[in-house]
Amino acid sequence: MPSVAGQMRSEIRGVLFHESTIMSRLDEMAAEISADYGGKEITVVTVLNGSLMFSADLLRRLEMPLRLDCLSVSSYHGASTTGVVTFNQLHLPDVHGRHVLLLDDILDSGHTLHAIRDKLLEETNPLSVKVCVLLRKDVPRQRELEADYIGFDIANEFVVGYGLDYMERFRNLPYIGVISEEAIVKYAPKLA
Ligand code: IMP
Ligand code: MG
Image (cartoon, rainbow, N blue to C red; front, side, top):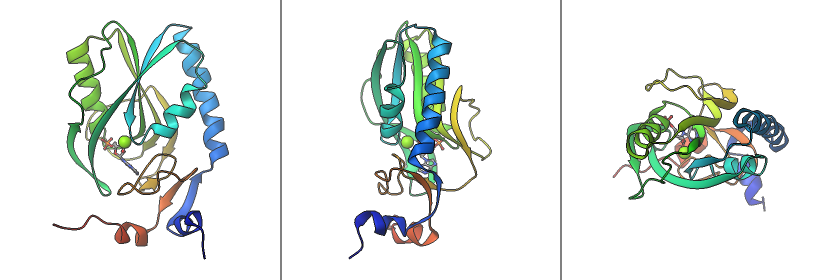
């Protein structure tokens, strides 16, 4: 009987970044971020659930003192953005007077990070806000947003693994891969 990981692999069209490649890139990103802040304390605001693995691995490489807050938002349904960003908690983290580093798994249309950054700036008066993403997709941004730190640039394909999901599946793959057309159809949201 094939293992669960084996079954999942058959639904992945190709591996884009192996675990070791991701770890090496995180070493570089963390060195750059640590150097830029020069020992200043930061508050990392991480966007769950997709950034869970990325945050855990990046934070352990950062050298400055830091606080951690998590935000949960949703805008995706299946493999396309709805453009409407819903905040799943009542309160924003209190980052008044703090240097914020906003972490997300992937910059796609830009809606998610744009909405979070705007809300933090409007409602909590941080000292600064920088944006750090593991992946940046090559698509026309529907919302103007430049990330300050980018792990990898990718083509316009739907990717899963290392925290990223399709219909809540595949987050536990240790690598980042492109999902197959068959799997997209197989797990597609059911029409009501
Ligand atoms: P944006 O708001 O369109 O920039 O999309 C950002 C969010 O959509 C990310 O935080 C992901 O949760 C999700 N997303 C966008 N593209 C992908 C993908 O290729 N795979 C998995 N999730 C994605
Ligand atoms: Mg996400």
